[in-house]
Length: 134
Image 1 (cartoon, helix red, strand yellow):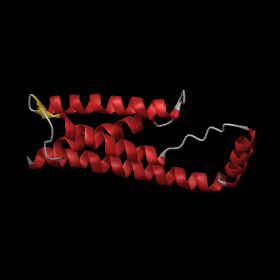
Image 2 (cartoon, helix red, strand yellow; image 1 turned 90 degrees about the vertical axis):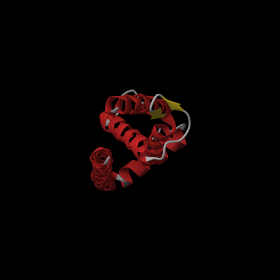
Image 3 (cartoon, one colour; image 1 turned 30 degrees about the horizontal axis):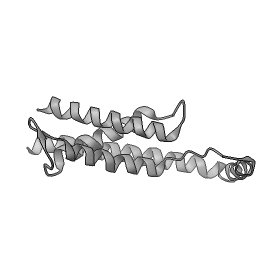
């Protein structure tokens, strides 16, 4: 049962991660594995903790896995940015903002890393607790 659940979560996470990558149009992305793992554990935790909804395929209800993946993907998407300028004016504005945010960026990077690590630990604990308490 656990293998079927993790397989389902991996497939859902791969789909949402692919959509996430398509939305950002970047060739190389730092932290790609971390983003995939966060979506994976979010889908897995949602699949095993949410009330079974929708049609079942064997003993697996797909809708909770999808909802968990959607919620975590939206959280990750909300904290990511893709600041590609469209014209010269936006490029100059972007350069001014980059200069002004240089010091803030270090603090934000540390804060986001801490937040994402805490989120991943929480999701892993949710998965483990579900199997321990079941």
